[in-house]
Length: 503
Image (cartoon, rainbow, N blue to C red):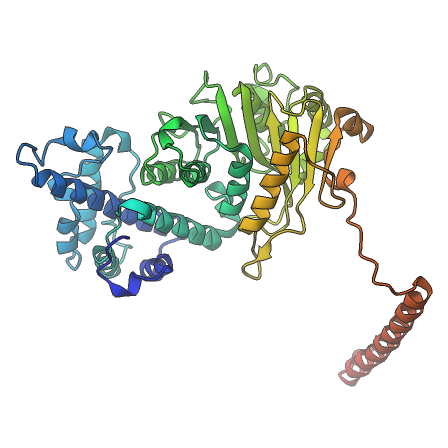
């Protein structure tokens, strides 16, 4: 258990305590600026704490040099130069120079650690960032040890992920650029089971797919060294967030030489991945189709210029190993669209026997959009050749706020177990929830993949009331409602008339 000097942060909800305190910083900063400030401080405190643990260990070894950078790198610890250590920042917390001290610290860390060059946020010295509030947040972090050992290694990761989630809720429709709800990511990971091999996300956002993969592997007592992580992201600030996110999880990740457009500057052109997980931008238009007409990735057809859904899908298929699996999130339109040649592309992908499963998700899972979405699972070497699993999960999940729903762990477990049974050949259809269909069955539906077409409607339990009696009761109730509505209508007309409006 991490040692915490501030008793207010000892409860399991300490992430919220940190968030509330850090929220003082918001002031007149917009969400994206504030996000960089908070996440940068968390990361800086984390690597400082981790460095101090190793520093103390080396101090007790008479033959070790506590300032030898190689000693730290050998253990996967970032070397923190003296001017960047947290005690220096803490001492400056309530001085006008605190912003400059933090900026200098971040620059010094980047100089000493090439992997972090160009990644860490800066500009804490800017005038609009309230230095008194910044000092208060530095004090807060000074009272918490961000690095822990044993079972609590995920301490900072929890804080970082919690803050990402809070920023997503603040940013609303813009949140989709960097944050995929963790329950969706966990569902994909539980189905793909990325224990060993190359894991790739071509639009990785803040790295949520990688984080959940790491958690999955650890939960199954496996070593993280069994996977190699590859990603790409076009948004520069989000690319930096991803670097910090994977670093605090102890993941070695190749996120490309720089942020870049995946279609025009593929950072991993020769990669053949064993697991591809992605939540690409929904229905992206103006993605540059006219400049990529002859691209070899479009094996199943040229994607339309007005929608990149099948461009993303084909990019992933292009990067898939001979036994690889894909799990991706797409807007529901991709299941049935016939415009711009999408129906033909979908048909060819189905006839190539790549579609292993489709899951219709419930609404309101995203902070950023109300668009209904589905999960697609594509596999090169299916355990059940010629068959596709359809799951209708639209009734699953629990409302956690008035606007946001989450899939609970039991929901995810049920979906993943259904996939496992399908792969093992032991699954039986369940009306209203799941069905296994052949390519011929899908062909009979004009290659439309909407799960509701295949799973049907769940059977309703007979309540024992005879049909004639039920209809008599319901029509009586309906008649009473009609009568009530007429009375209300007359009352509304009367009230409007009293103020000179006749309807």
